[in-house]
Length: 152
Image (tube, rainbow, N blue to C red):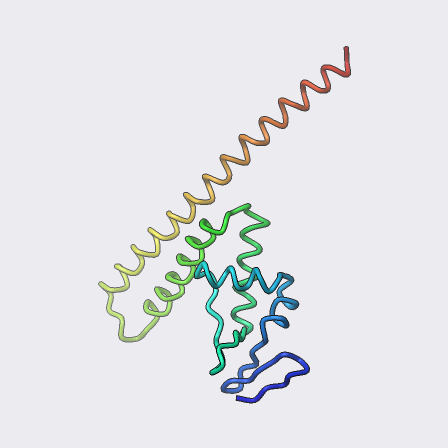
């Protein structure tokens, strides 16, 4: 393991890893957020022998996915955990499905499981969508009342 202290990077097996400060800066979040994501099991950075967290490009992509789910869909961290678990399992299913050793019956089982995961994720997004629709309806009613008050 070699370390470049000035840049906050560590290299393990030719994969550059970032210190928590460098990773937070690159991801546009705080160090505290990265620690919290780890506490919740949303993120699993590598650790040095001394226990220092080190973040890969894959970790940074996962943080970007977390932020996207928060801002784009308005999911809370508990909902995000469900989506990430489903994403992870879907990736495992895909790898197993395309493995040459996987038989037809196993592929059907994997396809059924993938369908269940996609259906569960759709339910999560649908629930969020319904909540947003209700909020928009309330805003529309408020706007209509305010416009009516101005018209008087």
